[in-house]
Image (cartoon, rainbow, N blue to C red; front, side):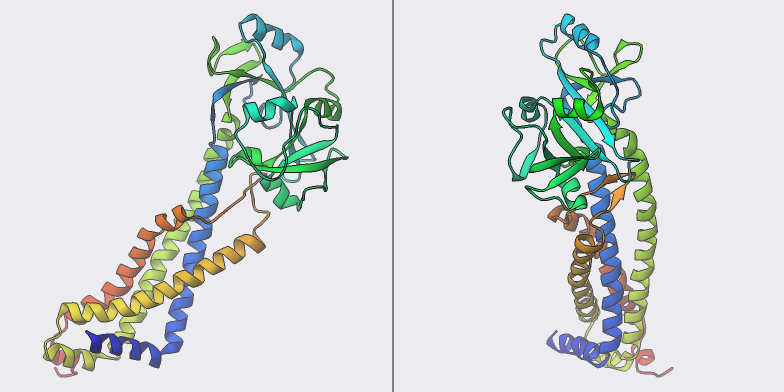
Length: 365
Protein backbone atom coordinates (compact mmCIF):
# COMPACT_ATOMS: atom_id res chain seq x y z
CA UNK A 1 0.00 0.00 0.00
CA UNK A 2 2.94 2.33 0.63
CA UNK A 3 3.91 2.03 -3.05
CA UNK A 4 0.37 2.92 -4.15
CA UNK A 5 0.29 5.83 -1.69
CA UNK A 6 3.57 7.24 -3.05
CA UNK A 7 2.41 6.76 -6.64
CA UNK A 8 -0.82 8.67 -5.95
CA UNK A 9 1.07 11.57 -4.39
CA UNK A 10 3.69 11.54 -7.18
CA UNK A 11 1.00 11.79 -9.84
CA UNK A 12 -0.58 14.74 -8.03
CA UNK A 13 2.79 16.45 -7.66
CA UNK A 14 3.64 16.07 -11.34
CA UNK A 15 0.28 17.49 -12.38
CA UNK A 16 -0.08 20.10 -9.67
CA UNK A 17 -1.83 22.54 -12.00
CA UNK A 18 -4.67 20.09 -12.64
CA UNK A 19 -4.91 19.35 -8.92
CA UNK A 20 -5.23 23.08 -8.15
CA UNK A 21 -8.03 23.40 -10.72
CA UNK A 22 -9.89 20.43 -9.21
CA UNK A 23 -9.43 21.75 -5.68
CA UNK A 24 -10.62 25.23 -6.69
CA UNK A 25 -13.65 23.79 -8.46
CA UNK A 26 -14.72 21.78 -5.43
CA UNK A 27 -14.01 24.58 -2.92
CA UNK A 28 -16.23 27.04 -4.82
CA UNK A 29 -19.09 24.53 -5.06
CA UNK A 30 -18.74 23.61 -1.38
CA UNK A 31 -18.71 27.28 -0.34
CA UNK A 32 -21.86 27.91 -2.39
CA UNK A 33 -23.64 24.98 -0.73
CA UNK A 34 -22.52 26.08 2.73
CA UNK A 35 -23.79 29.64 2.21
CA UNK A 36 -27.09 28.42 0.74
CA UNK A 37 -27.75 25.96 3.56
CA UNK A 38 -26.79 28.55 6.19
CA UNK A 39 -29.29 31.10 4.87
CA UNK A 40 -31.97 28.46 4.34
CA UNK A 41 -31.66 27.34 7.97
CA UNK A 42 -31.66 30.92 9.26
CA UNK A 43 -34.72 31.92 7.21
CA UNK A 44 -36.69 28.82 8.25
CA UNK A 45 -35.86 29.37 11.91
CA UNK A 46 -36.64 33.09 11.78
CA UNK A 47 -40.07 32.74 10.17
CA UNK A 48 -41.31 29.68 12.06
CA UNK A 49 -40.46 30.48 15.68
CA UNK A 50 -43.69 30.16 17.70
CA UNK A 51 -44.15 31.04 21.37
CA UNK A 52 -46.46 28.43 22.87
CA UNK A 53 -47.29 30.23 26.13
CA UNK A 54 -48.89 33.39 24.69
CA UNK A 55 -51.73 34.26 22.35
CA UNK A 56 -52.05 37.45 20.29
CA UNK A 57 -55.28 39.39 20.13
CA UNK A 58 -55.05 41.70 17.14
CA UNK A 59 -56.25 42.59 13.67
CA UNK A 60 -57.95 39.76 11.77
CA UNK A 61 -55.43 39.94 8.87
CA UNK A 62 -52.98 37.99 11.07
CA UNK A 63 -50.16 40.53 10.70
CA UNK A 64 -50.52 42.31 14.02
CA UNK A 65 -46.98 41.37 15.07
CA UNK A 66 -45.46 42.98 11.97
CA UNK A 67 -47.24 46.10 10.75
CA UNK A 68 -49.58 46.27 13.73
CA UNK A 69 -53.28 46.96 14.05
CA UNK A 70 -55.04 49.50 16.23
CA UNK A 71 -57.09 48.41 19.20
CA UNK A 72 -58.84 50.57 21.76
CA UNK A 73 -59.18 50.02 25.49
CA UNK A 74 -62.60 48.51 24.74
CA UNK A 75 -60.85 45.31 23.60
CA UNK A 76 -58.87 45.19 26.83
CA UNK A 77 -62.10 45.50 28.82
CA UNK A 78 -63.63 42.58 26.90
CA UNK A 79 -60.62 40.44 27.74
CA UNK A 80 -60.79 41.37 31.42
CA UNK A 81 -64.49 40.43 31.48
CA UNK A 82 -63.56 37.02 30.00
CA UNK A 83 -61.22 36.33 32.92
CA UNK A 84 -57.86 37.67 31.73
CA UNK A 85 -56.70 39.76 34.67
CA UNK A 86 -53.89 41.64 32.94
CA UNK A 87 -53.85 41.58 29.11
CA UNK A 88 -50.39 42.79 28.07
CA UNK A 89 -50.64 45.83 25.74
CA UNK A 90 -48.16 46.03 22.88
CA UNK A 91 -47.37 48.40 20.04
CA UNK A 92 -46.05 46.87 16.84
CA UNK A 93 -45.34 48.81 13.68
CA UNK A 94 -42.90 49.28 10.81
CA UNK A 95 -41.38 52.76 10.72
CA UNK A 96 -39.88 53.70 7.37
CA UNK A 97 -41.07 53.98 3.79
CA UNK A 98 -41.24 50.20 3.21
CA UNK A 99 -40.14 46.84 4.64
CA UNK A 100 -36.80 46.99 2.80
CA UNK A 101 -35.58 50.13 4.58
CA UNK A 102 -37.95 50.23 7.55
CA UNK A 103 -37.42 49.16 11.14
CA UNK A 104 -39.82 47.05 13.17
CA UNK A 105 -40.55 48.64 16.53
CA UNK A 106 -42.14 47.07 19.56
CA UNK A 107 -43.44 49.05 22.50
CA UNK A 108 -44.37 47.38 25.79
CA UNK A 109 -44.45 48.13 29.46
CA UNK A 110 -40.83 47.66 30.41
CA UNK A 111 -41.58 45.04 33.07
CA UNK A 112 -43.33 42.88 30.42
CA UNK A 113 -40.32 42.38 28.12
CA UNK A 114 -38.61 39.60 30.13
CA UNK A 115 -42.00 38.07 30.99
CA UNK A 116 -43.33 37.68 27.46
CA UNK A 117 -40.18 37.36 25.31
CA UNK A 118 -37.48 34.69 25.20
CA UNK A 119 -34.22 36.40 24.37
CA UNK A 120 -30.52 36.42 25.14
CA UNK A 121 -28.72 39.65 25.94
CA UNK A 122 -25.74 39.90 23.58
CA UNK A 123 -24.36 43.22 24.78
CA UNK A 124 -25.34 46.06 27.12
CA UNK A 125 -28.28 45.81 29.51
CA UNK A 126 -32.04 45.32 29.51
CA UNK A 127 -34.68 48.01 29.63
CA UNK A 128 -35.86 48.47 33.21
CA UNK A 129 -39.07 50.01 34.63
CA UNK A 130 -37.29 53.09 36.03
CA UNK A 131 -35.53 53.95 32.75
CA UNK A 132 -35.83 57.39 31.18
CA UNK A 133 -37.68 57.87 27.85
CA UNK A 134 -35.93 57.51 24.47
CA UNK A 135 -33.97 54.36 25.36
CA UNK A 136 -34.03 51.23 23.18
CA UNK A 137 -32.91 47.64 22.93
CA UNK A 138 -32.25 46.45 19.38
CA UNK A 139 -32.14 43.00 17.84
CA UNK A 140 -28.82 41.57 16.70
CA UNK A 141 -29.84 41.72 13.04
CA UNK A 142 -30.81 45.41 13.30
CA UNK A 143 -27.54 46.16 15.08
CA UNK A 144 -25.50 44.40 12.39
CA UNK A 145 -27.35 45.93 9.44
CA UNK A 146 -27.40 49.47 10.79
CA UNK A 147 -23.95 49.24 12.46
CA UNK A 148 -25.43 50.12 15.87
CA UNK A 149 -23.38 50.00 19.07
CA UNK A 150 -24.11 50.43 22.77
CA UNK A 151 -24.38 54.14 23.57
CA UNK A 152 -25.13 55.07 19.97
CA UNK A 153 -28.43 56.23 18.53
CA UNK A 154 -31.02 54.45 16.42
CA UNK A 155 -33.33 56.65 14.37
CA UNK A 156 -37.02 55.72 14.67
CA UNK A 157 -39.45 57.81 12.68
CA UNK A 158 -37.05 60.75 12.73
CA UNK A 159 -36.40 60.59 16.47
CA UNK A 160 -33.20 59.44 18.14
CA UNK A 161 -33.28 56.65 20.72
CA UNK A 162 -30.17 55.66 22.63
CA UNK A 163 -29.19 52.00 22.29
CA UNK A 164 -28.58 50.45 25.73
CA UNK A 165 -28.80 46.77 24.82
CA UNK A 166 -28.52 44.29 21.93
CA UNK A 167 -30.54 41.07 22.15
CA UNK A 168 -30.91 37.85 20.19
CA UNK A 169 -33.96 35.59 19.86
CA UNK A 170 -33.24 33.59 16.70
CA UNK A 171 -36.57 34.71 15.26
CA UNK A 172 -38.17 37.59 13.38
CA UNK A 173 -37.79 39.68 16.55
CA UNK A 174 -34.08 40.12 15.84
CA UNK A 175 -35.25 42.73 13.30
CA UNK A 176 -36.97 44.78 16.01
CA UNK A 177 -36.15 47.80 18.15
CA UNK A 178 -37.74 47.56 21.62
CA UNK A 179 -38.87 50.71 23.41
CA UNK A 180 -41.32 51.58 26.17
CA UNK A 181 -45.06 51.51 25.54
CA UNK A 182 -45.34 55.25 26.23
CA UNK A 183 -42.54 56.08 23.79
CA UNK A 184 -44.19 53.96 21.09
CA UNK A 185 -47.61 55.54 21.60
CA UNK A 186 -46.11 59.02 21.42
CA UNK A 187 -43.99 58.12 18.40
CA UNK A 188 -46.99 56.84 16.41
CA UNK A 189 -49.57 59.26 17.83
CA UNK A 190 -51.65 56.35 19.13
CA UNK A 191 -52.85 58.03 22.30
CA UNK A 192 -54.01 55.19 24.56
CA UNK A 193 -54.56 52.76 21.67
CA UNK A 194 -52.28 49.76 21.11
CA UNK A 195 -51.57 47.32 18.27
CA UNK A 196 -52.41 44.11 20.10
CA UNK A 197 -52.84 42.43 23.46
CA UNK A 198 -50.97 39.35 24.69
CA UNK A 199 -52.91 36.89 26.81
CA UNK A 200 -51.83 33.59 28.43
CA UNK A 201 -52.58 30.42 26.46
CA UNK A 202 -54.60 29.06 29.36
CA UNK A 203 -57.92 30.85 29.23
CA UNK A 204 -61.19 30.44 27.33
CA UNK A 205 -59.88 31.83 24.02
CA UNK A 206 -58.13 29.58 21.49
CA UNK A 207 -56.17 30.15 18.28
CA UNK A 208 -58.58 31.12 15.50
CA UNK A 209 -61.30 32.56 17.74
CA UNK A 210 -62.81 35.93 16.82
CA UNK A 211 -63.19 38.28 19.76
CA UNK A 212 -65.00 40.77 17.51
CA UNK A 213 -65.67 40.87 13.78
CA UNK A 214 -62.19 42.23 13.03
CA UNK A 215 -60.25 41.04 16.09
CA UNK A 216 -58.59 37.61 15.81
CA UNK A 217 -56.78 35.37 18.31
CA UNK A 218 -53.53 33.86 16.95
CA UNK A 219 -50.37 32.21 18.27
CA UNK A 220 -47.50 34.49 19.26
CA UNK A 221 -44.92 34.34 16.48
CA UNK A 222 -47.42 33.05 13.91
CA UNK A 223 -47.22 36.16 11.74
CA UNK A 224 -43.81 35.10 10.44
CA UNK A 225 -45.35 31.88 9.14
CA UNK A 226 -47.21 33.90 6.50
CA UNK A 227 -43.84 34.60 4.87
CA UNK A 228 -42.27 31.24 5.68
CA UNK A 229 -43.56 29.27 2.69
CA UNK A 230 -42.56 32.01 0.24
CA UNK A 231 -39.08 32.36 1.70
CA UNK A 232 -38.36 28.64 1.90
CA UNK A 233 -39.67 27.97 -1.64
CA UNK A 234 -37.50 30.84 -2.89
CA UNK A 235 -34.41 29.32 -1.27
CA UNK A 236 -35.42 25.77 -2.23
CA UNK A 237 -35.35 26.79 -5.89
CA UNK A 238 -31.75 27.89 -5.55
CA UNK A 239 -31.08 24.71 -3.62
CA UNK A 240 -32.20 22.61 -6.61
CA UNK A 241 -29.97 24.67 -8.90
CA UNK A 242 -27.10 24.22 -6.45
CA UNK A 243 -27.60 20.45 -6.34
CA UNK A 244 -27.52 20.24 -10.13
CA UNK A 245 -24.34 22.29 -10.22
CA UNK A 246 -22.88 20.06 -7.49
CA UNK A 247 -23.68 16.88 -9.43
CA UNK A 248 -22.09 18.33 -12.56
CA UNK A 249 -19.02 19.35 -10.58
CA UNK A 250 -18.70 15.90 -9.00
CA UNK A 251 -18.88 14.24 -12.42
CA UNK A 252 -16.31 16.69 -13.78
CA UNK A 253 -14.04 15.94 -10.83
CA UNK A 254 -14.39 12.21 -11.44
CA UNK A 255 -13.74 12.62 -15.15
CA UNK A 256 -10.57 14.64 -14.56
CA UNK A 257 -9.29 12.04 -12.09
CA UNK A 258 -10.08 9.40 -14.70
CA UNK A 259 -8.00 11.29 -17.28
CA UNK A 260 -5.19 11.56 -14.73
CA UNK A 261 -5.37 7.82 -14.14
CA UNK A 262 -5.48 7.11 -17.89
CA UNK A 263 -2.05 8.69 -18.25
CA UNK A 264 -0.81 6.10 -15.74
CA UNK A 265 -2.53 3.11 -17.36
CA UNK A 266 0.74 1.20 -17.91
CA UNK A 267 1.70 1.57 -14.23
CA UNK A 268 -1.72 0.22 -13.26
CA UNK A 269 -1.19 -2.73 -15.62
CA UNK A 270 2.12 -3.50 -13.92
CA UNK A 271 0.57 -3.20 -10.46
CA UNK A 272 -2.26 -5.54 -11.39
CA UNK A 273 0.18 -8.03 -12.92
CA UNK A 274 2.14 -8.29 -9.64
CA UNK A 275 -0.95 -8.88 -7.53
CA UNK A 276 -2.53 -5.52 -6.74
CA UNK A 277 -6.27 -5.95 -6.88
CA UNK A 278 -9.34 -3.85 -6.21
CA UNK A 279 -8.22 -2.73 -2.74
CA UNK A 280 -4.90 -1.41 -3.98
CA UNK A 281 -6.49 0.53 -6.84
CA UNK A 282 -9.22 1.85 -4.53
CA UNK A 283 -6.55 3.10 -2.13
CA UNK A 284 -4.89 5.00 -4.99
CA UNK A 285 -8.04 6.81 -6.04
CA UNK A 286 -9.21 7.37 -2.46
CA UNK A 287 -5.92 9.12 -1.68
CA UNK A 288 -6.25 11.44 -4.69
CA UNK A 289 -9.96 12.18 -4.33
CA UNK A 290 -9.70 12.51 -0.55
CA UNK A 291 -6.78 14.94 -0.72
CA UNK A 292 -8.52 17.17 -3.27
CA UNK A 293 -11.86 17.12 -1.43
CA UNK A 294 -10.31 17.73 2.01
CA UNK A 295 -8.37 20.71 0.67
CA UNK A 296 -11.51 21.94 -1.10
CA UNK A 297 -13.56 21.72 2.11
CA UNK A 298 -11.03 23.78 4.07
CA UNK A 299 -10.79 26.44 1.35
CA UNK A 300 -14.58 26.38 0.84
CA UNK A 301 -15.23 27.01 4.54
CA UNK A 302 -12.87 29.97 4.49
CA UNK A 303 -14.55 31.37 1.34
CA UNK A 304 -18.04 30.96 2.86
CA UNK A 305 -17.05 32.66 6.12
CA UNK A 306 -15.40 35.50 4.21
CA UNK A 307 -18.46 36.08 2.00
CA UNK A 308 -20.97 35.89 4.88
CA UNK A 309 -18.99 38.18 7.19
CA UNK A 310 -18.03 40.79 4.59
CA UNK A 311 -20.18 40.79 1.45
CA UNK A 312 -23.54 39.51 2.76
CA UNK A 313 -23.84 41.09 6.21
CA UNK A 314 -26.98 42.98 5.16
CA UNK A 315 -28.67 40.10 3.32
CA UNK A 316 -32.45 40.13 3.76
CA UNK A 317 -35.36 37.92 2.80
CA UNK A 318 -38.60 39.70 1.90
CA UNK A 319 -37.56 42.84 3.74
CA UNK A 320 -36.31 41.20 6.93
CA UNK A 321 -32.63 40.82 7.68
CA UNK A 322 -31.08 37.44 8.36
CA UNK A 323 -28.42 36.94 10.98
CA UNK A 324 -26.55 33.91 9.68
CA UNK A 325 -23.94 31.77 11.39
CA UNK A 326 -22.09 28.66 10.25
CA UNK A 327 -22.39 26.04 12.99
CA UNK A 328 -21.65 22.37 13.58
CA UNK A 329 -25.12 21.26 12.48
CA UNK A 330 -24.52 22.63 9.00
CA UNK A 331 -21.29 20.67 8.68
CA UNK A 332 -23.07 17.54 9.84
CA UNK A 333 -25.79 18.02 7.22
CA UNK A 334 -23.16 18.50 4.52
CA UNK A 335 -21.46 15.19 5.34
CA UNK A 336 -23.66 13.26 2.90
CA UNK A 337 -22.94 15.84 0.22
CA UNK A 338 -19.20 15.43 0.70
CA UNK A 339 -19.52 11.64 0.68
CA UNK A 340 -21.44 11.91 -2.58
CA UNK A 341 -18.67 14.00 -4.15
CA UNK A 342 -16.06 11.58 -2.85
CA UNK A 343 -17.89 8.52 -4.15
CA UNK A 344 -18.41 9.92 -7.65
CA UNK A 345 -14.87 11.31 -7.89
CA UNK A 346 -13.22 8.10 -6.68
CA UNK A 347 -15.39 5.31 -8.07
CA UNK A 348 -15.75 6.56 -11.66
CA UNK A 349 -12.02 6.18 -12.43
CA UNK A 350 -11.66 3.18 -10.07
CA UNK A 351 -14.18 0.97 -11.85
CA UNK A 352 -12.96 2.16 -15.25
CA UNK A 353 -9.39 1.03 -14.50
CA UNK A 354 -10.35 -2.13 -12.60
CA UNK A 355 -12.56 -3.51 -15.39
CA UNK A 356 -9.79 -3.17 -18.00
CA UNK A 357 -7.56 -6.17 -18.59
CA UNK A 358 -3.82 -6.14 -17.92
CA UNK A 359 -2.87 -6.30 -21.65
CA UNK A 360 -5.23 -3.40 -22.35
CA UNK A 361 -3.69 -1.32 -19.58
CA UNK A 362 -0.20 -2.11 -20.89
CA UNK A 363 -1.22 -0.92 -24.34
CA UNK A 364 -1.43 -4.35 -26.01
CA UNK A 365 -4.50 -5.44 -28.00
